[in-house]
Length: 229
Image (cartoon, rainbow, N blue to C red; front, side, top):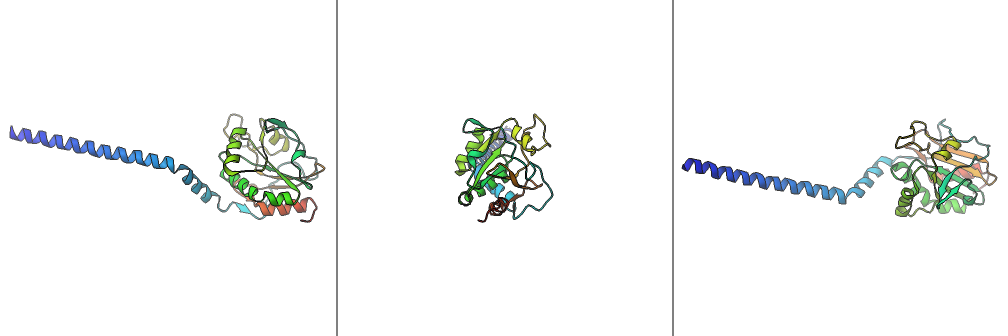
């Protein structure tokens, strides 16, 4: 009997120890989950910053050239802006013209988001140069608005309708099909348009992870529009 009682006591002690360890492990798991939730945005931003740290280049040097031909009339588009349909860009023109920024997504594409943030930083320089800026993505307006509000974006952002704008412009990314999550994204780039509605310049890089910097794009647009800064 004493031996049996000793074994029972030992088993009880081991059971309590196992329960305590389980509680500690569960508590640590819950703590890790809570920390991950609290730090999810900072951690995501750190990952985005690392991913995009070398994305900007000083010039478009590759042969990739989608979109309307230089010298052609801008073909128009079908997009939503401010709860209304937009077909022309006239209202966004500066005294010299405008730059249309075709962007993949302001909801999930870190390169697009960083480019838009940088362009916003130089918006006043574009305004002073008489060049309007307007962006377009395939995102639904509420997703665009969340980004606009978070980063105080003053550049007008249009929402393409059923990929019609990107199809018309000849920049729809054909890698994706209807039904794919990314169907409707464009090849990212910029189209420079003068006040007469003529396409006078384009900046498209084959690597979607690279973009011409805001300052280099401004210098290119000024040259394309035939005006001195």
